[in-house]
Length: 219
Image (cartoon, rainbow, N blue to C red; front, side, top):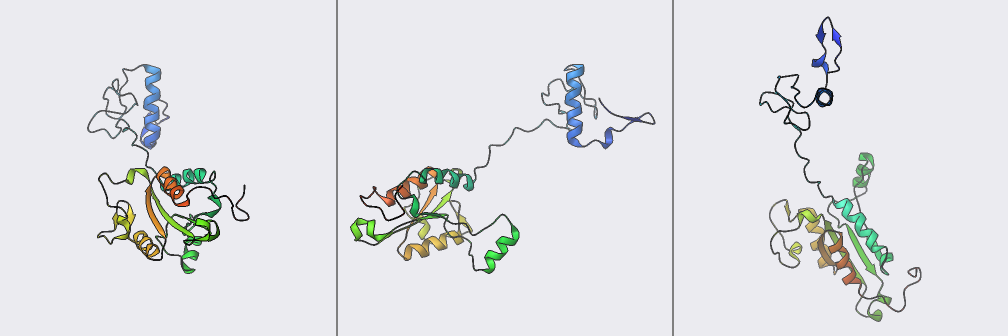
């Protein structure tokens, strides 16, 4: 062990937990696998990461790394990479009322920003929608991570029906409020789990590419 000696005493007690584990692991490389824990003198031969198996020793083997948590931000990035290739990309909009900076977030609240607004939306002008008949396309989508997908069957448009509790299938009450309100205003609404499902729904809403696109939409 690489410990300094002061008055014939080791300074092991001053080492951090990470430093101690590193020293233990390094000692195994030097002295072989039959090493012992410097804290409780228990053999560490069966511990691959240099931890200690003794119940009373604080230097336990590292726990297996948990499965990475899926994040909605990553889904939104993936979604946009898919959207960019489509004819309807100019009508796609991503909304975010929050900010990573506290001052900016507070400023947005003072400006009237509300929590729960849908993640993204799609707007297609009336002049290219059904030849000018039937009104413009207005669609909004709330995107959740795949791991939040309901394990059992759920009714279509379950998000427009009031529910008890703070959330349902990963959808918070304030998010459900806006989806219900926008649905009543004539918007198509959807809750997607993962970028692929969100993209497919938006594509279905947009429909096939029209013969004539508005100015600025041609690419």
